[in-house]
Length: 167
Image (cartoon, rainbow, N blue to C red; front, side, top):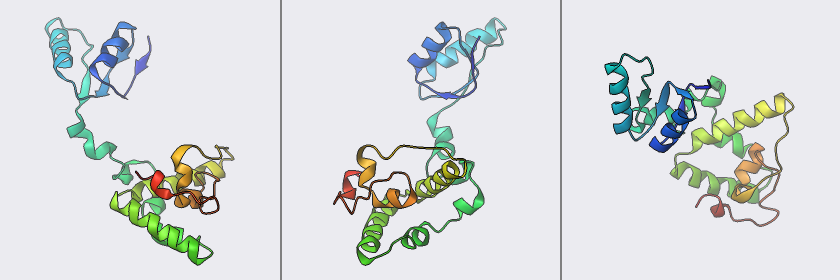
């Protein structure tokens, strides 16, 4: 029997998994009524198949992209001054202004922790000689993601509007 240790599901996913013979021990879900009924049934008949769950309200901080200390990355990346890090990579006024404009948009969305994680992730990919794609979708319009190394498309060179990524 396959055991899933922690998954994010809705009620239909849970029922489908149980019908397929999967053992589910811990989940994050918005739907709790049927899970509570299932757990009640298990306790009445002394089954050991009780499902432990969290609701998103309980786990909001834990899974939030804003809570970088739970992302299993070294402190040096959590403490990274992402503004200085990115501005130091610019080579001319046009690049500098583009980074400032994008950083303003990322800051308004409280996405600096995500940028720090991307720096860490790309460093780990490089350090472990893992290849990743050239770029895909609207992310290639972000010059900041280009500087971090998430993709290889120079959005300034191709005159791509970063707002396509940050809509």
